[in-house]
View 1: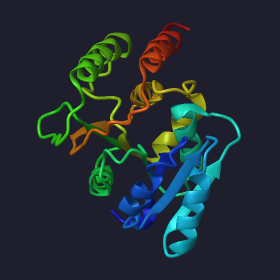
View 2: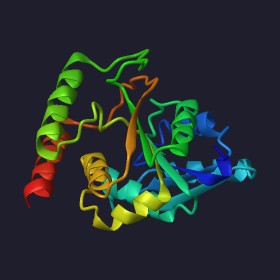
View 3: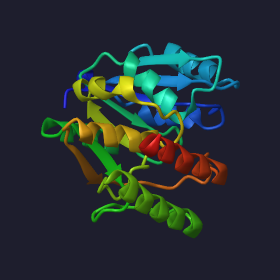
View 4: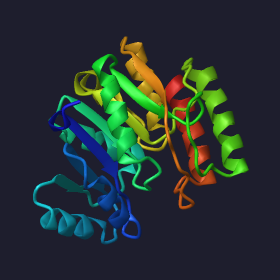
Amino acid sequence: MNPADCTLVIPAYNEERRIRSLLEDVSGFRGHLVFVCDGTDATPAIIGAFAGAHPSLSIRCLTFPARLGKGGGVVAGMEAAATPLVGYMDADGSTALSEMERLFDRLATADGAIGSRWVSGSVLPVRQGFRRRVESRLFNLMVRALFGLEYRDTQCGAKVFRKEALETVLSSIRSTGFEFDVELLWRLRRNGYRVEEVPITWENRDESKVMTSDAKAMLMGMLRLRFG
């Protein structure tokens, strides 16, 4: 992997409490970083100050006055990327930079690579709570039934793709919420692209922003996508 060929997109909605920690974690990345800020707090200012203090790093901060949603933010960042390889990760730091770099390496032979917490070889130093794990498995069953996707984990926030594959499907994406991951993988598969599911080291962060209301919205979004 040539770092200059890689862009990491990081949706950062109201992340002022933990964005400094993430910035330190990703400061060793020699590719391009695109943060997407669509909140109301000081996240853009913190990123801007960090970028100013680290001029050797390639950091962009896209700001939007209205909420884009997780999916909308990722799409905005991907469209802004100018490199042949593009990935995205969560701002909570659950996935280390080294894991994202390992996923980028898989693009030598695949169109996409997604981190998975539910395949053999994954390492979870801190697991999600029991209720969240049950919800994850039920959600995965619905994804399989509705879309025929065989991935064990569509929602892990660690994914990378070839930009040429993304350009084929991004204009068709309708989802702006957390169900975005499912639609992206579904459309890539329908267009004949090969996306590998890769075991990952992932550490749960207690401050997850996915709430019960989000889970309901994800289900309704998937039903509209599949049958609308």
